[in-house]
Length: 118
Image 1 (tube, helix red, strand yellow):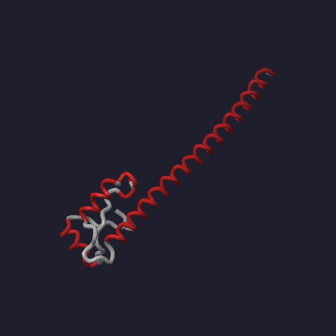
Image 2 (cartoon, helix red, strand yellow):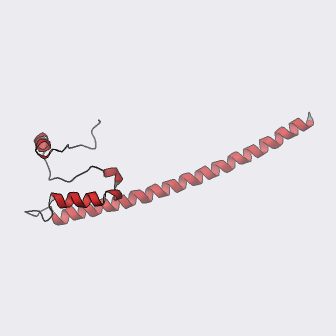
Image 3 (cartoon, one colour):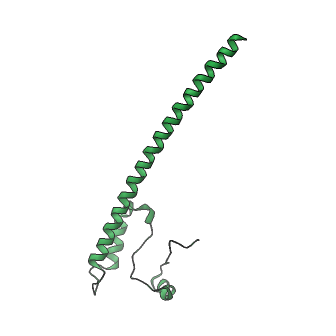
């Protein structure tokens, strides 16, 4: 009976140490994943900010625009890997809500809103 309780005590001690070690490793892995996601997000945010500057520089306030839609679509297509969460996003001139349906029919596109539930 003594050896059984001694074996159980050793097993319990080693098991609890292994659990603590796994918890530490899991915490470390989670911290690393958070760092990677933060870096990835910052890179994508910087790229989207660069696109905003491109649009502001070559389109807004210019009549006619210094960048046409084909050039912009080509650029966004070539750099889509930089912003995988924005796949399928295209730039268009500002469209009033009342003109949205007509714009979709004319362009053959679908305007999607971030706050709409589908």
